[in-house]
Image 1: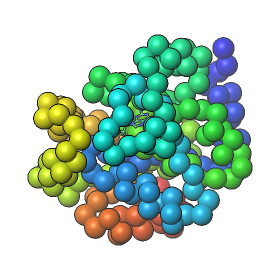
Image 2: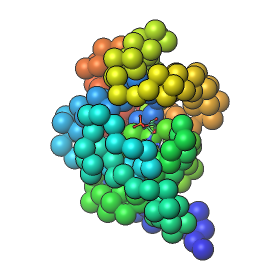
Image 3: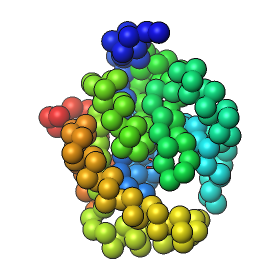
Length: 202
Ligand code: 5GP
């Protein structure tokens, strides 16, 4: 079993870095990540593995790698994930292999993960940029989730209920260096690019 210091070095050996984008469902994290990828030439997207079923607009292999619970547990036990967490009854994890390779190649690896994952990354890769996206207000969050129309009312309610808790955990854990309110998408992305390219202090 390797020590946590060994594992940290094994991931962070290169010149690149990892960016964590977290925030409650419906805050626009996916749009932010897509814009970061189109505006930063050295950015790459880390495709997570998940046990949750494919949602309306998604396609297998580009949004997520969809695997069953047994396969997830096997990979998790094998230390194949940089971080992993259970969220609203489904498992999510960041495959470690591509992240290690990209960081060594000098890439900026963009991950969109929940607060539990953010905390694991803070411990394992302290030099990463960890950004928590806040909605301008609770009503806009509700409207965005309702507009998605790809989930059951029950699922949507569970995600809304989770939002407050996630914000509190993100603040209390102190593992995010930046809190960014996503009011105007383009401004939010510019602010995050300034953080990533070190134009803003951590
Ligand atoms: P969704 O089901 O809406 O795609 O994602 C649910 C939550 O899981 C979101 O907060 C999303 O950021 C998070 N998530 C997606 N991929 C990962 C991952 O690889 N690890 C962790 N910890 N969370 C993830």
